[in-house]
Image (cartoon, rainbow, N blue to C red):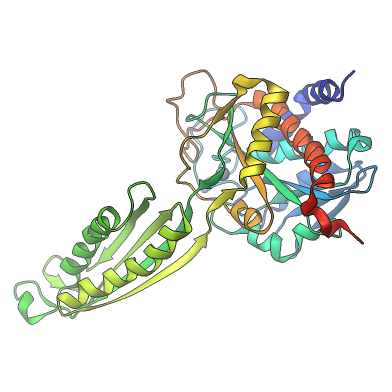
Length: 411
Ligand SMILES: [Zn+2]
């Protein structure tokens, strides 16, 4: 029996175990960098496998190194594990039992699929021409858990730097169920924050000329930011600026001293990001100055662009087509405006992040990721496990013979 068929049979055979594990995780979502119950569940699920397991210092991560039968490079597979502060409204019988917390982004599937990959690859250790680092990561949803795991050395967990890295994200809606999609280059946006305080001088609402009204000026800045976005940026290399919070004043007839607002800023290239990083705060200060006020504007870098190395994206698409059939891969036309801290891994080593459609039924017009009604189906998990395993096995073969892998020498 060919290796591909054996892997597929073994991945399908673990379907019930994956469902059980995923549903246990789903019932007990945890938020942020400390996920003690989730961490314990993962450690128990990996128990009995011949892995070198370590846990994080500054977060409840799990890193597991699987040593292959033969010497070679090391590759990394990543699954994020955190939930969201969302009150679940799916009505599923395995819905969250934690008030105000939900696995609304499918990270419960990611965790279960990475455990499945650990089991599948362990069972086929003799096919591995090197080592596999399994990165179970907390705190993807705005906590930069990946950045912390990099600081704690996840990329070198096998004793040398991994030569490539792969991750997977499930989607509800947007992608046909069971279809894999990705693209070379920019895959997901860079996500940054703009914090602005317009400094005026309070006074009576009846005599604004005796005060310096920060509310009208802040409102003008908010609309000017939208003009900045459309007039100063290439329509084919866009940025998104959304002011999601705006606070000023206490009463209708009192002009306050200051007005504050915060925006999220998304960009899809280094050029656009570098430009908006300078242009947005400058615009805030200059519009305020034009009206005789001042503004403090701070631009804070959050998650970088998620960029797929072109060769690795092509390699990943090829593996999907070969393992699952042509029809299961769909090239992604445009980047996704969401952001990801797997971007930090892909900044450090080449690799590919791939999306998998996981909503129930064939209708794609369903509640999406982060919705309290988002539903992700169990049935996609064996294929996710299989893709993880195939990518690891084939990437090790490829990286072992690629000329860029001289880091292995002397290791
Ligand atoms: Zn997510």
